[in-house]
Image (cartoon, rainbow, N blue to C red; front, side, top):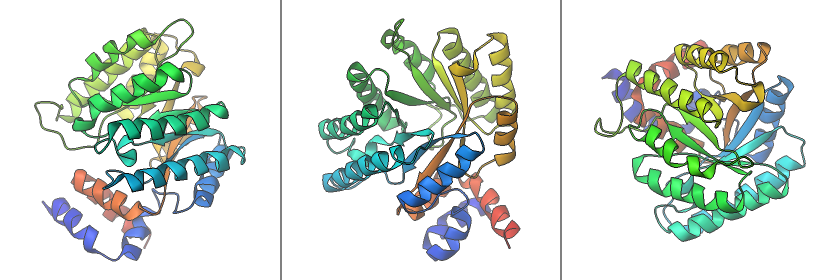
Length: 303
């Protein structure tokens, strides 16, 4: 109850106060901030995926601005010798406003990345976006088979079926690349598992399906039991290091990340940045009030 109350109050607090906590988990507001954070991670033998903050826009003029900002980001990053790729949220380009223009804008972004032999991953958002996001992924993959990936959420009851349905996209020469995360959006029990242990069980079930079917696995989690379960599966299937990677959020569990790197695993960090950091931070707290206790702890640890 206290966490829910605090999560509702935070959006009305001064931005400077909220930033004291948010800056641990967000690279900054500018491309230069993203470059600096990414370069520091690269020095620790860690790859990155860069995300510009902003989602659920109100008009298509905003979508065009977001497209242009991503194209600028890619060109800047490719000139900086950063070891990383990019993540995009379809609602940032108008998925719920104009599906066709959204496709055109994201296709342009993928084409830009492909011109540098790089890669774009489509982030998965809440349940109303799932079918449209999969459709978007399928459509772009036909043209850019090596430059596009997708995020799937293990807490959704449909995820294993979704993965099975997309195996037709995989051939001897065309790979499938999925990031598997637990899922953060609040969804009803009819469509999403609610229990922590049940979600973990299905996460590892989905991950094993990926490994058995030769799908490149981006293992996105900070949960120690899930990480250990993933390591057990990697050993079980004798999975080569180039067929998987662990992914973590910027500023979260750095000790665990460094441990995996020391053990020789590929690790990538999700690096968010942008001027919309305040909305991103407060929205995430509303979606998951349990995060508030970690935020308060971090704030007092920083004095």
